[in-house]
Amino acid sequence: MSDFFKHFVSEFELPLNNPVLIFSLILMIILFSPIILRKLNIPSIIGLIISGVVIGPHGFGILEKNSAVDLFSTIGLLYIMFIAGLELDLNDFKAHRNKSLLFGFFTFTLPLVLGYPVCHYLLGYDVNASFLTASMFATHTLVAYPIVSKLGVSKNQAVAITVGGTILTDTAVLLILAVVIGNSQGELNNAFLLRLGVSLAMFSAIMFFTNTPHSKVVFQETRK
Image 1 (tube, helix red, strand yellow):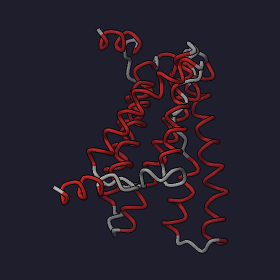
Image 2: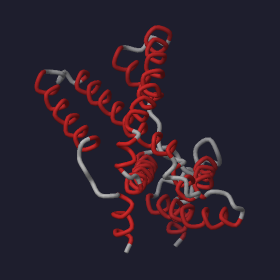
Image 3: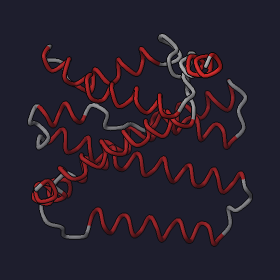
């Protein structure tokens, strides 16, 4: 019996390593954090961010950065971008695509142009590491999109341009990641570039030239 209690207590030693406890803690935060902050008129996404800081290695150290936490954070980010994509009207996006292209171009190229020399010449990174590190500063996400959607301004022109620019910058960063991985593994050949070019052409055709129904209607239908 004493061995059982010792093992039981050891499972609660910080940082938590038991995947069941990690999953339960994250679910409790997702459930109760928005409820508490809603009473304070604070957006729920703020509570989730604060909770992550508090339980993380730089807070109380309840969780450490590991593959499980990375998995949950990636799923959350992809879910936010998925919801943003469902609520995005591609017709509005196409109407502002030039502005989105311009916004995405500057928010991608400026950090990349400034970051690469710093990483390569000042920090001494090699070419692959310099491009990869600089591209991390060139991308941005839609973490604050739930706040925008809740306030009912997701159809605003500035929001549509920002979402479009985010899609473009994330796509460009993924292209850089693919090229860097291919170069580091010695697979950067004509076949690799051909596959990459075909994938990019298909993505561009879907984004800019395909006529699609209003995504808001599709989103409402999926919720019924």
